[in-house]
Amino acid sequence: MNSLGFDKSEKDTKVVVAMSGGVDSSVAAVMLKKQGYDVTGITLKLYNNANVSKNKSCCAGIDIEDAKNVALNNDFKHIVLDYQDKFFEGVINNFVDSYANGETPLPCVKCNETVKFSDLLNEAKKIGADALATGHYAIRKGSLNDASLHKAKDFSKDQSFFLFATQQEQLNYVRFPLGDYKKKEIRQLAEKYKLSVSDKPDSQDICFVTSHSYRDLVKNLNPSVNKKGIIYDVDNNVIGTHYGISNYTIGQRKGIGISGSKEALYVIEINKDQNSITLGNKEKLKQNVINFKNINWLGGNILPRGLDCSAKIRSTQEDLPGILDINCDHGTFTFEADLDRTSPGQACVFYKNDQLLGGGWITA
Image: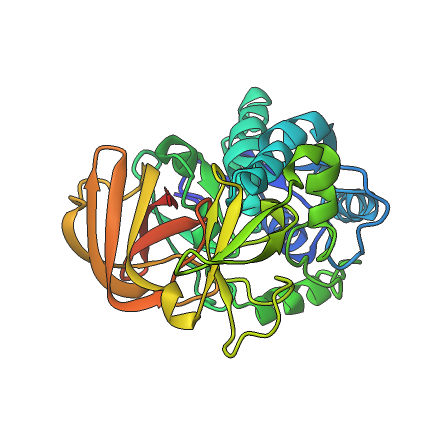
C-alpha cells in the first residue's frame, strides 16, 4: 500500500488536489508531487470581488495566480474551473436565506458540502483520479470503503468540525495529507519547497465578504429582509425597534441599539414569523439541551441512542461531554453543563475521543 492507501505505485496513483492558492493546499500538492504521485491541481474560481482583502480571500484573483505558479514551478498540471454560478447557488444563496430566516449560516460547511466534495469531487472522478486531496487539517483513517474522520494532530488548527457534512462515499475518496502535521511544520515545508506563498497569511472568517459587509450583501441580494420590527424583553415588554432581523444573531450584545439598561442585554431569540427579537441577560443564553436535524452520520455501527460522547456547537470551542440521542433525522445532545446557546443554522458536531461521529443542523 502507498501512503494514500492504494495497492499500486505512487506514479500510477492519480490525485487531484484542491488548490485555493493558500499555503496549506499548496504544500499538500507539492508534498504529494515530491512523493511521486501523479498530481493535478484544480483551483475553483468562486467569485470575483476586487474589494476582498488579500488576507481573507481564497479562490479569486491573485489566489488563482498563486496556485498556477506553484504548479508551474513544481512541474504538475493545473486547471482552473469557473464555479461562480455553483458557488452562488450552493453557498451565497444559502447564506442570504439563512439570515433572512433569522438563522446564522455556516458557509464553510456549505462550501465543503457542495462545490468541494460534490461538484469538484465529481470532476476529479471524471478525469480518472484515484483520490481528491485537500489542505484541510483533519485525519482520515480506514480502508478505501470504510473510512473514518478524526481530529488533526494540531488541535488548534483542526477543521474536522467543518467537514461533518461529508458523506461516507465522499470520505472514502478524499485524502487529507496535512492532518498529521502542525501548522508551523507546514510553514517550514513551504519554505523548504521554496513556495512563493510560504509567508502568505491564512484566510480568515467568511472569504467572500469583509467583516462588516455581510449585512450589505444580504440587503443587496434580498432587500425585503430589512423590515422594521419590535424588540421585546423576556417579559414581553416592548423596549425598542429593530431594522431587520438579518442584522442580529443569537448571543449578540453590541450594535443592538438599546441603551439605558442596568445590565448587559443579549439577543436570546429571533422570531421570523413575528419579525421580532427578544433581549435578555447573560443567564438567559444558558442551556444544556441542543436540538438538531438533517443529521449526517459517520460513526459506522456505533449506535447513537443514549451514547456517551462529546459535542460542540462552535468550531472554536472544545468538545464537551454529554449524551447523544438520534431518532431518524432528528436528535438531541444533552451537555453535562450549561453553555451559551447559538443560532439555528449553526451545527452540533459529535465526537468519540478524536473520532468525528457526525453532526446535524441546530433548530430553534
